[in-house]
Image (cartoon, helix red, strand yellow):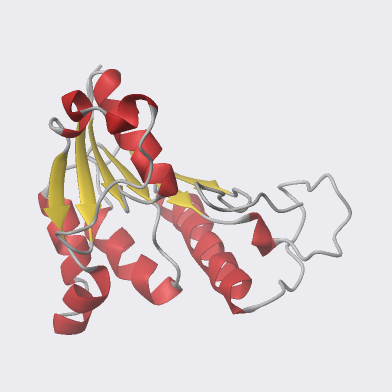
Length: 181
């Protein structure tokens, strides 16, 4: 079953990998970017092939600028695309997340995937981390913000059946970066 997938941050490390693979699997892919000059991050495998990127619809929408212009305008424009699935790879604050969710929630959205961070766990939490345990106070502003977004999204699921998955990835490491341990 082919779906329309909107990837916010489609030329980030993860997005550059994801968008061509969505096309490979027969889905329609809309790559939302901040700037018309933004280019895919990776240049290997199917990511480098114009066969795939030529089929990805690129849309320039700057979240911060649009929401500054009118509260929730970014989400309204995402919703107007009528996506089946939204993958948000670039949401870093609760203030950016809330109006997007309000704009897109409804019966036509099948899934919303938020790329969070394992930083929502404090570094002093015993591993392995268990999803159902309460989150400790995170270290740093980024972790605090990601924890707020996660809490909001999970509450939207529990109260309104908002179809969300929060991915808690580790640090993304791309070309030119040394992996962290």
